[in-house]
Image (cartoon, helix red, strand yellow):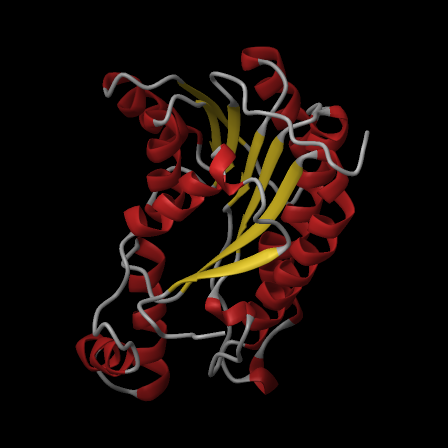
Length: 267
């Protein structure tokens, strides 16, 4: 394929979205569905996947999905195979599945470290490799890989060494793969949310409240004080950038890590 490949998006691209039953992932699945994508989604819990697929279909969107552990190579292979057999080759991969995790580094267990890194980083590699091969993206002249990283992928997070390390690695992987695939017409970008009001955000506030021996309300006040806009971003605001990156107008954006953070990070 030439170094100036400029393929156009198909009429109804197939989008595979991980971690798509709540928070940012659900907002992304809904946004892409509204843009005409055929959305194949996954999460760990089968009942949540079924309910989400049903909800999206009731909104008039084209959706299917299955439960999958994206840290498991065999499960990833099955997931991508199911997406392809249902809708056809994958044109858009959104690696959204992730988890928080940290604490005082001296107290971080092997199990916590490995699970955070496996969920946030290894899954991105496993899904991307499988979609490039069995998913058909490796031979396509158009495609989008969008990794949901974090502003923690650009700066250190207090009491969050495992999370920070994993998200820095996702940003690095994105930049390297973006350069690698640039000649093909497949772009690769990371979207880096700051504080976003999601179920995971509530768990993070709870963990900090316990670590600081204070209330979750105080923790939220401290977090919001750091944000120039003075508020958390919404999942829909993050999804809006993801959706834009799937358009042909975004064809020249690749190997980037783009913030959605209310001004929290200006880098």
